[in-house]
Amino acid sequence: MKLIEIAKFVKGELVGDPDIQISGLAKIQSASNGELTFLANPKYGKYLDSTKASAVLISKKQQSPDINHIRVDDPYLSFLEVLSLLYPVKDPDFDGIHTTAVVADTADIGKNVQIGPNVYIGESVKLGDNSVIFPNCVILDNVQIGENCRFYSRVSIREGCRVGNGVIIHDGTVVGSDGFGFAPDGEKYKKIPQMGIVVIEDDVEIGANSTIDRATIGETIIKKGCKIDNLVQIAHNVEIDANTVIAAQTGISGSTKVGKHVIIAGQVGTVGHIEIGDNAILGAKSGISKNVPAGEMWFGYPAMKIMKQKKIEAYLRRLPEMSKKVNKLIKQLEKLEDKLNLIGGEDER
View 1 (cartoon, rainbow, N blue to C red):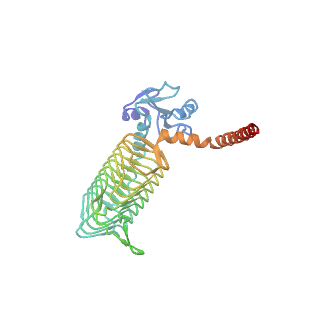
View 2: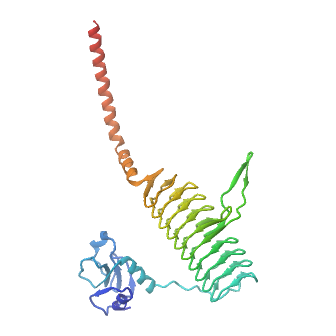
View 3: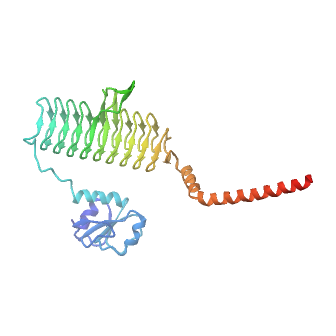
């Protein structure tokens, strides 16, 4: 595309040659002639003078560089828009319902649905218009799926679960597996029936090989706009409110409630039956053992408010030095005690 066309698409202000042809996108440090790049993080500003890109997206607050550029409110978001424009999502290489798919007679399949090879769709499933089901997916009885959904290979949706519109689920994820419920029965454990379902609302995206357990009774709920990374475990009866983001290898224990716009970094683990308030941030590898108030940033194991945790870590790093000082003080005290004991003995004589 011509640079002027891209500028119009992102509603930006073009400074430079409008007729330059852009054939690809690249990082600022590795871009070459014919490519568009962006500068959002100031630490990459050092590459601005040396980049070989034909043009760059920059913030309206940024000083004009000596290169063709488009000034926008948010260079990163504008770059993502251009990325979607130049590299649209690839259509599947199958059309309609593949001959090897098994679709129950009672399933209600919408318009323009694409169902790939070896897919199984059970009784009374409802599948909305324009949805795409890639090969080897399993959708069991009474599942309801909205419009414009996209399930990649080997996704499993267990019986009775409900999925909204515009949901993307990546390879190998399981929605509606049994919750981890067992009751002690003498020397053995007795399985607690998991009779609930999972509800996933509109515009949710779930990464590869994640698991979302069905509720024991009632619903495990993932609300509108949540984004969940790969290898995330969400246990039974968890409720995650709208537009929360969860990074890889996080585990959320049963009956935990997570608020709106929460950011949960990688490898966070929570105990069950706690509440995490709206707009909270949980740092990577944190162990969350109690309620987190709204708007607070917690970090560590066990997790606490981040500034308190940083102070503790600062003291921990100084422990070897402090240990030497303490040992030195102990020796000085011992010498002082010896002198005092000696003086006391002489007074008695």
